[in-house]
Amino acid sequence: MGPPGRFGVIELVLEPAPDLGCCLSWEVSEQQIPLHFLDGVISGLKHVMSEPEFDGDYLYGARIRVVNGAFNSTDSKLSCFYVATALAFRDALRQADLYRSAETDWDKG
Image (cartoon, rainbow, N blue to C red; front, side, top):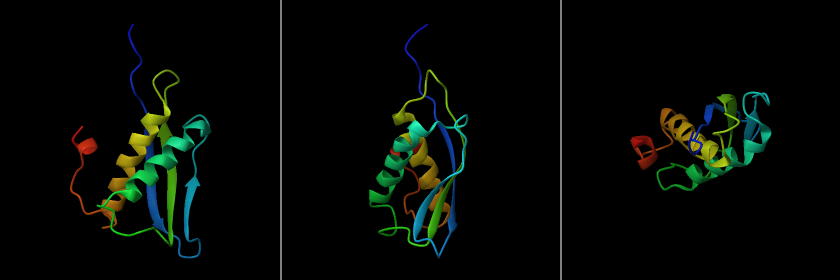
């Protein structure tokens, strides 16, 4: 027994979508990630887009797909999905050469 831990898992895919501008596609079920964690996900995306390492003002013509994830009814909080999203989004941006930093404090874990 003790205080609850922290748990949030999210898998993002960044893909071209030239006809859509920039959009977020929520492709997970309520059993994977309950919708009430969406605010944490959006905050994590916004945080990364505001970082100086992000190479671009916005992602026009891109789709950010939330394709998988997991939560725990005791240990998951908005902040868990904020952090998990920021980590996953940075990784996706690095793979697309849109993020300059090799690692951040969160990545050092």
